[in-house]
Length: 417
Ligand SMILES: *Cc1c(COP(=O)(O)O)cnc(C)c1O
Image 1: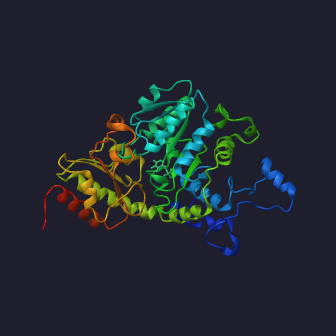
Image 2 (image 1 turned 90 degrees about the vertical axis):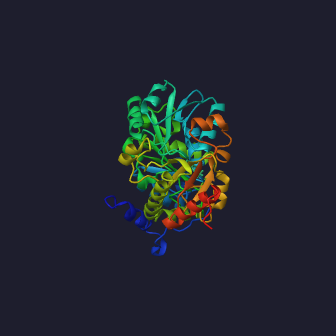
Image 3 (image 1 turned 180 degrees about the horizontal axis):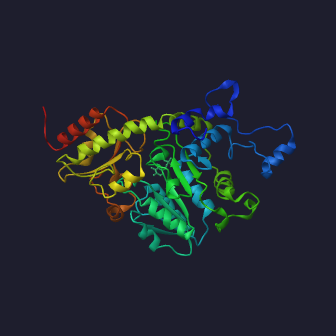
C-alpha cells in the first residue's frame, strides 16, 4: 500500500481493514462502549498491554479509520482526531506545556489560535509572537524555556508564507518541538514532514472535509521528533516505545481527560470529503489563481494577497514548497469603496466565515474574525478596514470573476445598465 500514490491510498484504505460484509467504507460505529468476552482483555486494554476499544471518548473504530487516513496523507506515524481543529490545538498545547514554558508562535496566527495562546499566558506559559517569514526572527527569541515553536503554512488573511524550512532547521538545531498548522495547504499541497515538522495540525473542517458539513481536527506525529528528550512527558508513558510518548500523552491528557472527542458521524462525513481532496483543491486553487490575477489588475483594488502572484513577497518560497498556492485570496479596496457594499452586491459569493468549503465565501475580516484584536494589532498583521478575504470554492471560474466585477462596479458607482 505504501508505494501507492495519494488518492489511491486514501480511496482504498478503509477496505484494507476488511469491514463487515465487504463494505467499502468504514461503518459509522456509534457505540459508546465495547463489550469483552474475557474481563482480562478489558483490563489489558486499560493497562495498555493490548489494543482494543473500550470507551469512545478515547478510541472508536470509525475515528481510527479517519486517523489512519490523515496519517497516510501526512506520511506520519500516528494521528489523533478531535471534535474541531481548535480542540486539536488546545489539547496538544495543554498536554505538552507546563507553567514556566515558552512557546514561540507566528504573529499572523488564525485569530482563535492567537486568542487561545493568551489563555495559556494566564496559566503561566509565556508566549512570544514573531514574524515567521524569516527564521532568524524565530531563532533570535529562543530561550532555555522554549518548548514549542508553532507556525501556520499560509497566514490568514494576508497570506504570508512562513519560512517553514528555515524554522525547521532552527528547531532541529535547538531540539525544539516544531508544530505546523497545515490547514491552509493540507497534505495535498504540502507535507510539513519535509521541513522537519514534529507535529502537524489539520482542521478537517476546512479543505479536507471540504463540504462545510462537519467539524473536526487532527494532530499527526511525523515520527521525526525524539520524545525521549522532551522534558514534560509524564512517567506512566515511559514504559512505551519513545516514539509513542508524545501522542500517547496527548491522547490521555488532551483527549481522554479533556474530552473534545470527534463524533463518529462527523468522522464519516470528513472521511468521505477527504476522498475528493485533490480534485477539489486542483479546481479551487486554479479558480483562486484566476481570481487573484483578476483582482491584481482591477483599478478599484489597491492590493491583492495571494502567494501565486509574482508580486507576493514569498512567491518563490511558495513555489518551492507547495504543489499549488491555496484557496485564500484577500484584497484591499480603494478608499472610495465600501467593503460591506461589495459583499452585499455579490450574488454567487456568499458572505460567510469559514474556508475550504466548495462554495466561495467572502468576509470583511477587520470587522469580524479579527475584530477582537483591535486596530493596532490588526495593523501589525497587515489587515485594513477594507480588507476582504475570499475563500475560493469550486464554482465555474467565469461566474466568480463576473460576480466580483459587477459587485465592484456597482459599489464604485459604475453602472452597466
Ligand atoms: C479554521 C482553522 C482552525 C480551527 O479549526 P476548527 O475546525 O474551526 O476549530 C485552526 N487553524 C487554522 C489555520 C484554521 O483556518
